[in-house]
Length: 395
Image (cartoon, rainbow, N blue to C red; front, side):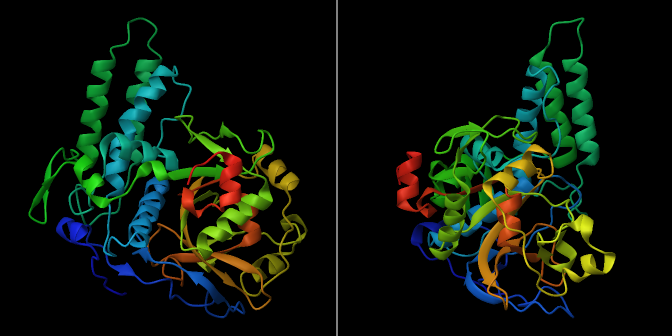
């Protein structure tokens, strides 16, 4: 690990964060011991230390906050950051509860969410350092929201399904807030940090981030290209919209982002057969899994194989058939190539550092990313100018 120094006077006075920050990914250039994969770094960008979301569905917050921490590094604001992921989750739960009731119980009321949730919370409430708000009653325990989720679902379901009385939103909001306080702790309205008083809003403003600079992109054919639409996935409970690009330009954006110094938050899935985090790899082989023997499946993470050729059509079909689902948020911080010149993205996860041999990172083949990505979040200046112009994005 490498310690960094805050680089501007304004941020020096702010003294953001206390995380150990690591330099551009320096992990093993293979995915695990005994593997024949040999990676060469094409581009690797700064990221903060790997965190652990514990037994929660809050990957959307962890990956987004990791992304914004890298953004602050890119902006020259210093390199020691650790923003409170659970402050964002704490503020999102009541918003989700209100929506669930207003949708008559026909919406998402769970731990999951999307990158837009983080953007919306920061706009509305701001952000705080981890040191100020951990969302834990016992700092030695991992995060666990299972009982919290069940309790909130019970409250909101009872309200939404009560046909015999007028809904008392004020009482419902009080019950939700009290429940969140009981499990996560009360979110600070003001706090002292490094000798200075902040509100979450003033702390966000002091970072220098402009949340309006960040956009969401995807690539699907059931909506027109170069337009914005609401992606139909359960965790997009607030119906936020994203820009739609043809797959070749979507790929160009991701590659351009990394090569020009911008990381991006990545929404994909973790439940399919090619996602092997324990083995430090995510791949989509050319041969269908249904045609593979057990030995061939086991061999996938031991040496490079030909990758599936992704097209706009088969990508769309996988989404339409629920084969591709939006169930995990991560943070892409670089690109490597294997010995066959096949590109892979360097992905920072939020499951701690001890669950694989890559210190909590893994390598996702370009085919996997093209096939399984549901959306990305990145700075609008990471988009090639010609593509941004087609989208109507002013950079």
